[in-house]
Length: 317
Ligand code: FES
Image (cartoon, rainbow, N blue to C red; front, side):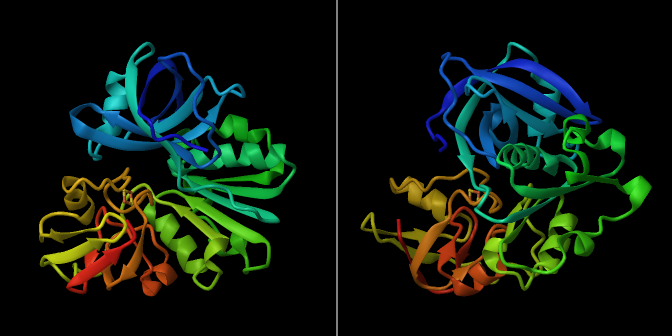
């Protein structure tokens, strides 16, 4: 449903969606249609100076010839959003490393979507699809104030399915009131800043894992310093090699040097692209992607950032 072959895109439209938010309409430079994508998908952009950034898709044309993604300008960020806001205009081209979806819609009877700020981007695409399929869905959308909240106009078309709650008018989002109790067939989606995700995670702590789907922009704040900082061995079982990972490098980097590429995107444990099965050993989880139950099970690891508590790990790579 998505593609991992790099291609170039050309910007054909730039729109101001809200204070600090621009959306970019793009086509492929080779004139081809984009790979099939579904709501929740993002573009991995390979920006100048080695910046790799992920931007969620908010829409695209039905024939697959154009896509649109939205970008919040983050002055204190690492430079990707500043570059797109300040240096990219209609006619410019960009490199796409991949089109992926780590936040897909799962089958459910009822969808409760919670968006904070720019987190509306993938949820707008989800809302459109759920509405077109006649599904039961509701979206709770919070932001600092109305001027900072993108896509209020298209969302207004959905009537009372969308609850808009700017903080300066309404205060904090009523997560508990909106999500209610866990129930069979109910699934919650949340994308937004860390405090919002943490509040939703806390409310849904006892829900079945698949009943809560999250997408983070930034790594979760780690409560404790990393436990193990030394080197360790990793057997890449499928590849038939064992590597030694020193304290200052990641499993994924050392594996790549040894000729084994583990697909990656964010390189900071948030996107889920590099998820890998653990066959033996005890991971030292440092990601922000795995849910608490998954971390406790130790059956998966994010090798872009996580390490090992045991002297040796065996991975299904
Ligand atoms: S590359 Fe994003 S979680 Fe590892």
